[in-house]
Amino acid sequence: MEAYKVKAVLKQNGTLVLEQLPFQTGEHVEVIVIRLSHPAQEDASVDYPLRGTVLRYDDPFAPVAESDWGS
Image (cartoon, rainbow, N blue to C red):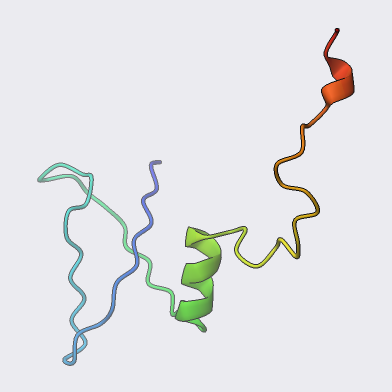
């Protein structure tokens, strides 16, 4: 089974339109609809999973593992 996740917004009349799906004409698909409780927060965590995780940079331009290199 191949899964494809897409987010969409219902139109005013309750119609859901899914465009540019990666399947061929005539293929059978199953559609499961799940309401997102907090779409803005969920979108940010999916698109930018590290957003807000860095608290500070002590020395961002300092060499890393300099002692591992032979001189």
